Image (tube, rainbow, N blue to C red; front, top):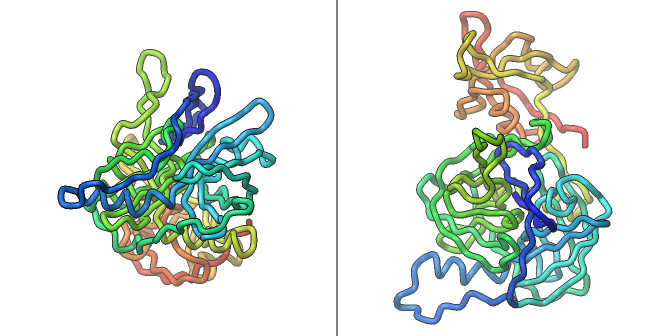
Length: 350
């Protein structure tokens, strides 16, 4: 999602994500307050609970600048955000970071650690105390149709609240200029998400975080090949279970681990068809988890557990949503036969 940079919106080529620029001048931040409890909606209550835990993140490096959002993890100032926010879309690892909380207080911040694989990062506010940590929900219990409320700073407008529903789960989204940099196993929502919402909270009706807003779909202009920026009702958030796990690892060790299957794959499809039929194994790493389980080149993986796999991106997302050491059951098509293969996932090198 977008980082605000001076001048007209550049197109950085992110797939399914609009990382576009634009500057904004805003009034002082204001808290969300329920003034008429009897007529308040569930979105009002959710925003009132969660908004104090969402911050605006400002990032500068040389002549470049941007902004995004973040979610408070602890009272003493640990904040979860996106990697692409604090690195200005991977252009620097030496950025200066400042944060304003929901009440407008400004803090200097340092980057504790980043995890490009999941597009997550943790920063620490200097001298902070008494902040309001967000409450995280169990994202495995989220259902399609649940209410979803996005809170963040689109276009630099702090404490902005938009609402919608959970549109889909387990949505494999590939972002990055080379299509392989980051694959997130996302919650899809139609809550309005725009440039600057990156790193902010997607919360449920109880005001508990179910995801970290990270990407928005864009539509190419047929005449100019430029992408349409801004909300079109298709946004993506990193599930809270993954976000919490990665954040805690970064806080404790400065980095995060990810599950490893030990294969490279390509989408299997009938010749001339755009419909994926699974992930066809192109290479198997010697001694890796897949090799130890008997996976072979040419096998087509069609499911991980109960989750259907149609493309290679689906397989990557499914593996990355698991934890190192976790045992998973793959459905594998080999020739004309199909079998179940149990694999204990390894740990990917950082």
